[in-house]
Length: 103
Image (cartoon, rainbow, N blue to C red):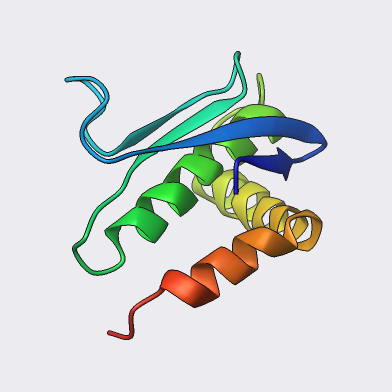
């Protein structure tokens, strides 16, 4: 998986085997450049957790520019955004299913 469609915009996804910069040890999302970076971890579900976290930033960036922040607004935006992201990116579900470890 090298890219995802997030609310109509293509984000490049890059995985790293070690930290790619000091400030963002696990991952980051650059909404302006439409890039998500994730560090690959061998511990539990850290890589999937980080990927979903960064997708959340991308959803928030695409759906909520300039909107007031509230818990309800955040939860609504992210829930709807995840449904749209998963529907548009079947390879993401396949990646999660193949790599998730039971807790």
